[in-house]
Length: 64
Picture 1 (tube, rainbow, N blue to C red):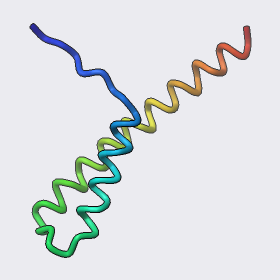
Picture 2 (cartoon, one colour):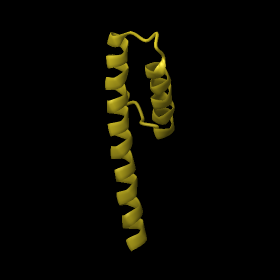
Picture 3 (cartoon, one colour):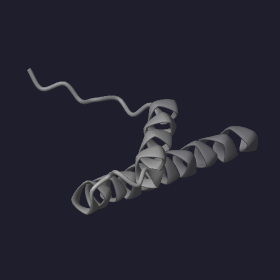
Picture 4 (cartoon, rainbow, N blue to C red):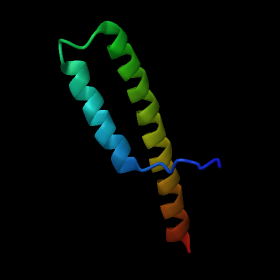
């Protein structure tokens, strides 16, 4: 069974906060920092895309 994971923006924001905290930690290795940074960029892009989609839907609803 192939289930698509639903994007929940609140979960993405929470994960971005976790990543931010880990990146501020001086004990986080460079390799781990790079992996976390990459994950953060992907999450922020997904959040931006989601918000743009919601904005378009709101505009359409306001035109009705």
